[in-house]
Image (cartoon, rainbow over all chains, first blue to last red; front, side, top):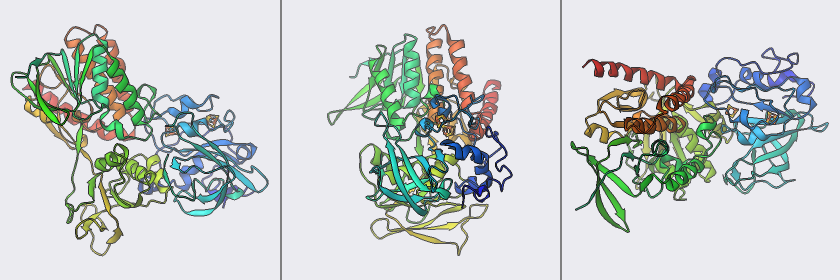
Length: 200
Length: 372
Ligand code: SF4
Ligand code: SF4
């Protein structure tokens, strides 16, 4: 798995990015065949959007799991820090300026694709923090321990709920902050809340 | 005998395209009659609980139901728009008269209208799929399931299989889970997922498998649906024996595409063309959304099945053009030009590729229309 001292395991280095490239995500080409066939991003897709290690450890930062050119740009309008670069064409892939992004998570709630996550790798010595969009009821309570699910919905561990940001308007997307085992920062992308699941 | 209404512009269908068309025309000062068969305006928007894509001009990031509310309020409060709900348009007659049936308190009355301009935004209907058992109770069009859940608050069942991994199939699978219905699998006959990858990833995170190159072989059940057998299909979409998988399910949702509702346009004698990329038979139309019959405009899914964001922009162009043809829109070139640029931008990316191909084919028909 993806440890703070072993960036290669999440496929970051495997795809040649490693920790050397600081700055921004290059707008790459098309989404991988795996993503088109299965809905699961491939290692090379993720490698384009996971920030370099120094950025990941510095503090919370947005990871845009948006790999396909679609006509969409609310992430750009939602960011108050100018960390999402202006779109030349509305179909452009979003580009984050990691030097400007402070992981506030405004874009997480705004993205209609629920494709943005904020990750703080090394939130404590042993844990990482993830802010994720969650549109099901009941919403978890702060302090509650919930199931930690990966991109296939498979349970990979437990998560402790740190905060639940309810949207100002009823129709918005809640953002749940969870603390997971440090190595799971780029693995966990959903939670299982006891008491079932109903749409928010 | 019913009196004949004489609006300057009549818009059929109060969905995203129709409401945008009505507002655009009414803002030019013309009197608009907006007609819809449902009891509230919004069309498909009233059941779309997901947030929209597109850009700010088309309410990106706002949920469909909210867009329905916002546009609905604008339409209701507009001094130049009269809205007739619960009113089904029945037919178009050669003298330019449209007949309508309106239900009032369980009764119905007949109405007629002879508008100077007609904008048809009637939307689309769901395509069926043939397989043994497709007539069992529990086999639904995906749109029907969405209406049950999101308009009427009724759970369609406990466990569903979804057919079709286009945006509609993916989005409704997500909404089924939000409603507390388990989704056993999404099956898709094509080798790749047709909808946006972000929607696919969203349902994968819920643990829902997406089986590409798979289709329904058979639906099972005595009195109602109990199980579904799916199988792998080859490149010619033929089932491969020995690859069957059976899922227990009491809901089978078909999201295999939409066909434009173009009956009125056929009746009006509009030049039609069969363009699979646009969903089937569609009316030829020019860049002003005008059909081959002068004075009849079309927008939204009725003009070719597409996303609601594009429908809103195309509806706006149709409304402006209808008003302009009555001499009521002096800034038409500028306003329609802006809208056309938005439409082009929305269609520019890979998901718009099919639409672009479809429109090119429609253009060829257009050249024949003009030549003949
Ligand atoms: S997390 Fe905040 S600062 Fe970073 S891109 Fe999103 S909105 Fe901008
Ligand atoms: S808002 Fe979300 S889906 Fe849309 S472009 Fe930005 S990251 Fe992608």
